[in-house]
Length: 78
Image (tube, rainbow, N blue to C red; front, side):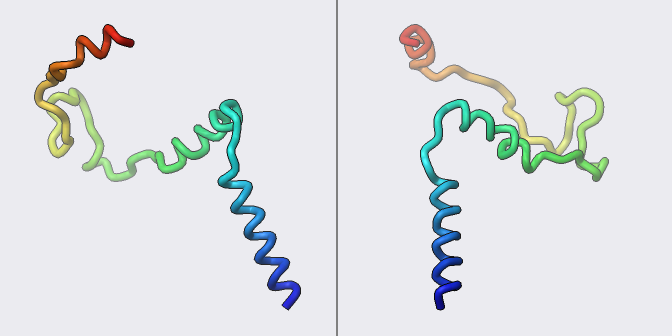
């Protein structure tokens, strides 16, 4: 029984470390590990883009860009 409680305490301590507040440099240090974790080279060549991306098929992209009505004001405020 005691070893089970000790294991639960250890797991709780690990979770608390994961969710504890960190400072900005520590947070930024972890960005590459988490942000790029899911990136990989596309092995299926039928799903990758070749040549001009403007003529790519099956690749969602906007047809046009339009600034919102308040965009200019928001940029001035910044």
